[in-house]
Length: 50
Image (cartoon, rainbow, N blue to C red; front, side):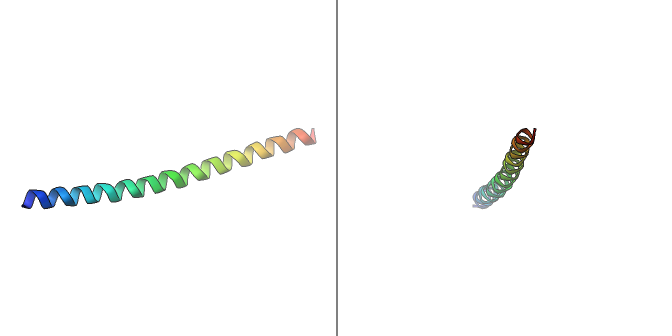
């Protein structure tokens, strides 16, 4: 009984941690892709100016 409850708690904690980690990763990924797109736009604008 005791080991089972610990196991379920561990699974719940792992699920929560994975959810949190995925959210953080997706947030970071969105930020990096956004900055990448912005830099690409800037480079294109610089090319047009030249």
